[in-house]
Image (cartoon, rainbow, N blue to C red; front, side, top):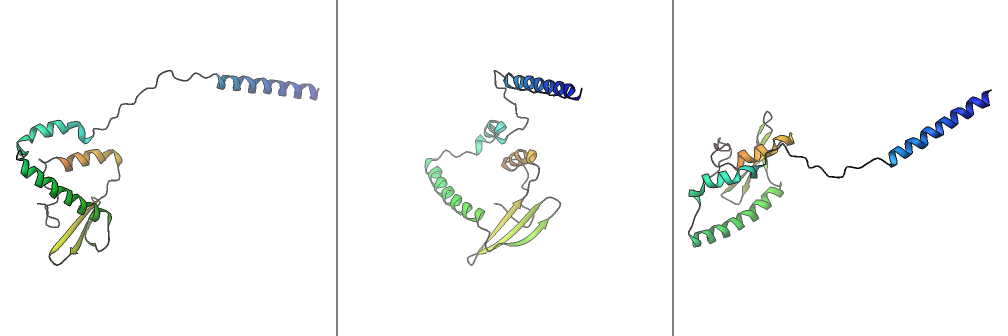
Length: 150
C-alpha cells in the first residue's frame, strides 16, 4: 500500500511541475513598452520662462560677447581645477543642520579662494535645489559673511 501512495505522490508532483513549467514558459510578454512619466520637475522645465523674464540682461555687443566667452573659458578651466582639487583647503565653517561646509584656501599672495560643499541626501530634492541656485531672482544665499559672490 505504501508503494501505491508514493507512486501517486510522485505522479502528481511531476504533473504539477510539468504544468508549472509550461505556464511559465508560455507567459505573455507585454506587446507595448509603457513609458513612466517622471514626477520630478527638472530645472530645464522652466528655462524658457526664466530666459524671457531676463532677456533684457543679455548683451548684444559682439566684441563684448567675444571677450566674455574668452573670460568664461578661462574661468571654467580654473573652476574645474578647484572643483576637483582639495589640497590646501581648510574647513572654516560647518553647519551640521543644513549639511553645508565652507572651506578657504590662500592662493598666491592676495587671492583667497572660498569653497562651499553642499550635501544633498534626498535625491528627490536635487532638481529643486539646482532650480533655486540657477534662478537669478532668488536672494543671494552665499553673501552671508563667509563667502561673498560678486
